[in-house]
Image (cartoon, rainbow, N blue to C red; front, side):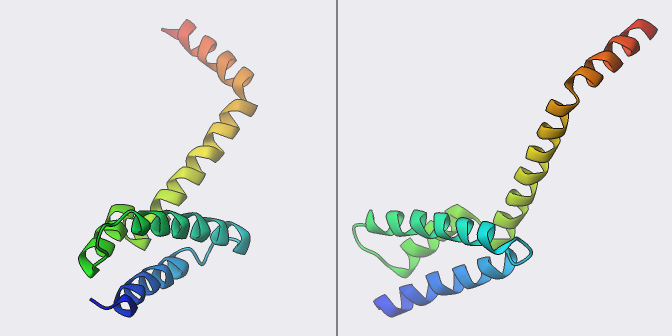
Length: 103
């Protein structure tokens, strides 16, 4: 495949990814896009012979834009839950002790 064809595949992928990440604040969205673009660029540089198939394999390894967005949502939710648990550590310990006494 021509270089422009490979570039079109990458461009389409990042266009779909940008759309999937649209609900994010611009700075967070751009950070994720930049990080993933750097990853793809480095992976492409490691290819002995860049082809449509090899580039599609790199992108498939990352996951679909929708999968990346779901993973990002899960990560953010878990981070928020962890932060909440850290803030309420003492209350959780007290509640756990009270519960254990009922057993």
